[in-house]
Amino acid sequence: MESWFETVSSALLHYVRTPVFVLLAVFAVIVALTVAFAVYEIKHDRP
Amino acid sequence: MEVKKPNTKNLGTGFLYFYVHFVTELICFFVLSSCIESAPVAWLIAVAYDMLAFTPQSVIGYVSDRFRRIPFGVIGLALLAIAVTLQQTASLTFVSLTILCLGNACTHVNGAEVTLRTANGSLSHSAIFVAGGSFGVISGKLLAALPAPLWLLLLLTASAVPFALAAEEYLKKPTETDPVPCRAFRYNDPRRNKYLVILLSVIVVICRGYMAYGIPISWRKTTLQTVMLFCFMGVGKALGGVFSDMFGIKKTAVTSLMLALPFLLFGDNNMYVSLLGVMFFSMTMSVTLAVIVSVLPKAPGLAFGFTTIGLFLGAAPVFFIKVKGFLPNCIMLTVMTAVCVGCMLISIRKDERHGKLV
Image 1: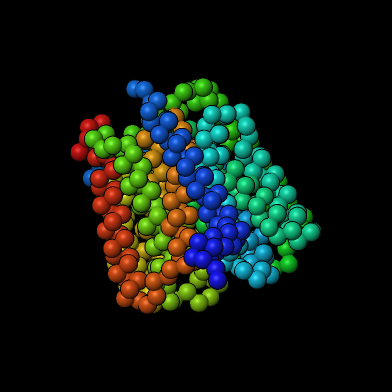
Image 2 (image 1 turned 90 degrees about the horizontal axis):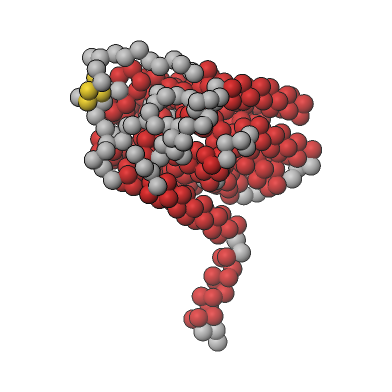
């Protein structure tokens, strides 16, 4: 009988391979970079 | 009421990139409409397109801010030509869509860079540039219904290249070498934390993006009516920038949103009332961009990217959660309008009159 851990892991692995997850991952990376760039620009904004 | 003479210096960049933006969206929506027709998962293609076209603009914009010599405008148009050729000749749907999205992002970013850097603090330039998109979207959708030959699409794409190159001429010194190219944009309230200003502006963009899909338009039944809808959207975007320059950005933003609400709510079965509402509703597009640029004056491309991320975040939920019914939509529109007005009242500085704040 499959344990809960195996059930969750196989579901997650299945989800990771879907296009929606890939899109979400790309989106997360882009947003993280955008925020990082904005923080850098604001910190280095001298009058 | 003080009426200022609008700044028309370098306004040519706005009109030049109006056409480039028009062609970009025409090609994109032609390809997108053609792909969605034959695709088994149309909604996934639409979500993927929105994400890949909108969100990378912040990163591409930042690269453009740092490396001004890269001709993103021409690169974008070249990518559009490649995408449409692949889609028409080899039916490589996902490859052509990916290249299409990158091309779209590049031309958008360059349009923002050129119009913001040459505007000297005015909103008209970027507003006119942005307005071109609405006309392009409807043109692309209409063209997709016809058997448009590949040579026509490539010719249209090529016709935008001289416009993009001409716009670059406006970027000659001193704007090219100024380390703070958008120093004249000072629309954020200096008492507010800069991160808060960016967050509130993005919230406004998200709300507006979602609201656009909830506007009750039962009157829209014919192709001509759809064309008029998109035309009024485009006119509203352009007027938003012009009115902001003439009457003040805060006044224009708050007044246009509040005026839009009753027209949108009561225009469900009346086209003319609804079109006025759509026009007022579209006026805030350039305002949010100007506020974010005010906080990031050295990185206008990055600032533009924040608005496109907001647009995606506003449009994406529509694919999964849609408010149905007239009354729930009206409640949603009213609540979101209140949120947008509140965010703008907090983040935008007071308008100036005779050089003094009022």
